[in-house]
Image (cartoon, rainbow, N blue to C red):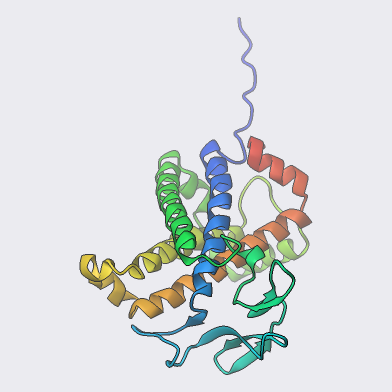
Length: 265
């Protein structure tokens, strides 16, 4: 009689999740950096259908002073913050101060080139949209979304949410399942943030006025879509930053290796 060997536990992260994770890391990095270069062409944001230098902007990154004494600044509404050396005015490749919203080390390409930045951005936008669609379909088929990201009624209880908050503050994580805060973050990114960025990106395309004017109207105008796109980018950068912080604080080698090799539940 043959003895049945115990089966090994399933991987913590499925192959489709790991592939999408690392591919998306590259795609998002390129899209953010090329997007910042595109923003450098007109570093002001508006609400509505129109926006130009003479119109009131709700966000502006700029510089004041002459070439020898540039001062960078960020204005959001009525609040102004000095950002010399980082935003608005920063050192160029030759060390001299230059008036530019985001410095070259944060953009693709590193020197001002709007046309090239748009080509980079559009190419990787396709990679983002196709990758997201494939990942969502695959996750629905293999049950990843229902099994790992579904938030049960018990998890919505304030007591349960507060318990998860305390566990995160203590850097105590359950490797066998996602906590409610993780689920909320992942669901928000997958089904709200990324779709909103794709839709607002499409709404900024001039051809959408003829092909799908309802999409432009949905955002209240192309300038509103641009603002939503920028806010979504900031939210995505914040999510990535928080994600990396949690990884570094809770055992980076083990967690990074799990996302490479799969790990065990």
